[in-house]
Image (cartoon, one colour):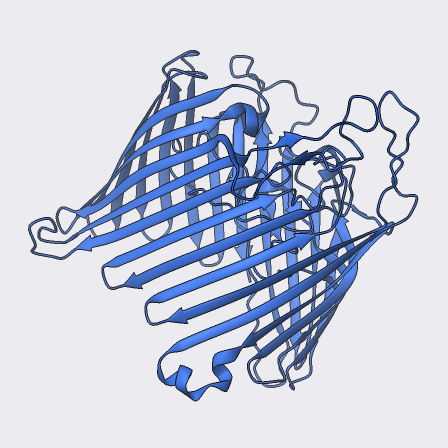
Length: 544
């Protein structure tokens, strides 16, 4: 089920009190289906439900959130289960460029290489900080932030570890009249994060020995970056470094972590281009060293793989390899052929080519010190430009073409390489070719019909897949959808789904019934395994 996160918009009218909020409830009434491997259910109804309320009066904002996940949807970690009020904050705006927040908050330094806290309900992620946050914008062209506190992990705030951090950005162009006259903006910034652990918080014994690892009680992380924009061009360079932080993610080695990110883009009428490169090594950074999975991350490594919205291209999504490290490249080129040209036709034609190429690091293991394991050592040696085997590759070409006033056609071809062993733990390398055709026909001002046909061809894993969808929109209130994902290769199983969605003012209700295939739900390079399910799906959203 799709979960819609609602952002809060603040508005004040003189001395009036402004109240905003939202309710989101995703419900599954499950049915067991041995054919698709749903397993058994202890509860008759499963739900993830959230209710937010925010109140603003003059310079003060307060907010809270109620969460009910006592009987959660399938696929979330065991500790996700619970209910209560895990989010509560008060924010005071001085009116002189200083904002102070006490309680729970989210923030990000730069691209998030050393610090990013956020909420992503579809993944079960909420790594907010409980403490204090200060943002200062009192000096022209200068933004400063400082924060400190403990991190949330589901229904627990572990006071055995705490963090503090600061971020500074300076817009150089604000002090240069010549740069402003030439439409040039230049930002330089830097960040620092300190993560402190209780000295005896970890007791890691090297297997087969009596040696106890001496774990660092503090971890330091730094980030420096610069962004330059001039005319149609934009450039970003960022470097991050983290001190020794042995953890379950990296096999308790003592090698320091680092990341380099470069990005260049060009945008003009009818044409756009983007190139990005990233090298990351041992940059998994958590407030709890012994954990794996999706929780307790202090940072977030940006994904350099195209995030697909079509069902079959998203069948094998890439998860960023933060601890092992990776070399990642992404390029994108878009071009619009003008109307009434040879390739543009009457309405014009849009083409977009995207290439993602991600490899591991070529590593040479060091000699073990304790027994037969590299625990307690630097783990390996490698060179900056030494690349390992291919983890993931995606080459896709998309075309958008309006054929008439009432019909629009989208086509896509995708060639994919996916190392399932690296990303999921087993399965080998999958080589796939995928084709997508989407048509949208406006019947009249009230009714629109949309359809999708997709096919994935591969000789690995479960073989070929086919997907079809029909969607009828009846403005302004209703939308009817039927779809089927069919494994034509190994299992011959149909994953059918039918739903109706109603929208009225600030209310949105979706009712659906069918099967959901087991697989990974990913966002921003972070993935959650979702087991197969069947049953009645209900999703309700309301904003006020």
